Length: 222
Image (cartoon, rainbow, N blue to C red; front, side):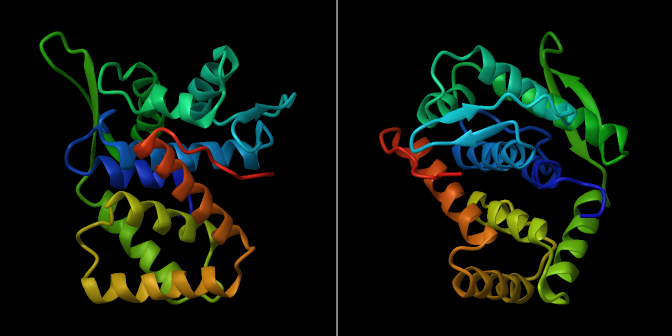
């Protein structure tokens, strides 16, 4: 993923031929939030406590698509994981999710990877349809990076975890290659139980638990 962040690459695969992630797609939305929140933590914008997101005093430059989430977090009175995830996993209103996905999709459109279109009765929904070669090219790069590099780039490992847990692995990847990638990533997690990939996997699993059950709090410390 030479020119894409994990959040961008995941979004590209998650929208696939639908051009959009909907609020009721719990696993897809939660995995996108896992990528975004992790990226914000790496950028020094937030940290994590047992139950909630903590804002820092960082004034570091932010990637454009992080701004909608950053603004939402600053305005929110409740930064518990459960509350924030509910804001994005909503079947009633996709307002916060739309702000995030529109920012990511616009960046991908500027890179020539998706085409942007307004659809609906009043043109109220924005869709980002990947160009024909965008996902196959990403899948090929992911395959090469993980299977033929040791150690493989951590960002590719993060992406694979998200794709697998959300059911968004590109169909162009044959099953035997998926299994080979799965085994190598699993081995890396088991070999370094306190490593970055293990930590990210645990964080994503706990966010998925919160989003699906709505009652369990995450225990992920910085």
